[in-house]
Length: 191
Image 1 (cartoon, one colour):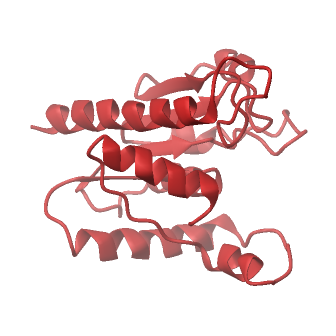
Image 2 (cartoon, helix red, strand yellow; image 1 turned 90 degrees about the horizontal axis):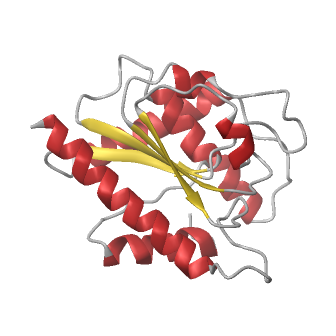
């Protein structure tokens, strides 16, 4: 939750008037504090943990919120978007670097969280992300409720290669502005 990506995105989001609440799945916290790099637990357990965080956040705010996350967090948020139990104040989902498939396994698509989702969904993706490139997304037929924004020459953290005219700061700013625009649209549509 305090990786360089998350810290910088939260700063750029704040500049755009977006408040963020960050949390860390327990398995990630264990890794960070010297635990093993075991694979994540079953995603249904992560959904329960994420929903508890959402409910805690909703107890502290009035009105609608967006949920989302980076990579696995975005995938779990998208999965929650298909659940009837999700609080109705959740207005939309933001995925920063959606893991369309495991790295190096493009035949193992993770489409159901996107196609079964009931809420507006924004994906900000690096166009060369090894978990789902622009070409791979372009080959899919996704629901009209999904907006895709491409970070130029970006990888899974939206960072471009050193030879690119794009910058990581520019791509993070793009992600924050896209989130701001998405929030304005989603919240206007709710009125």
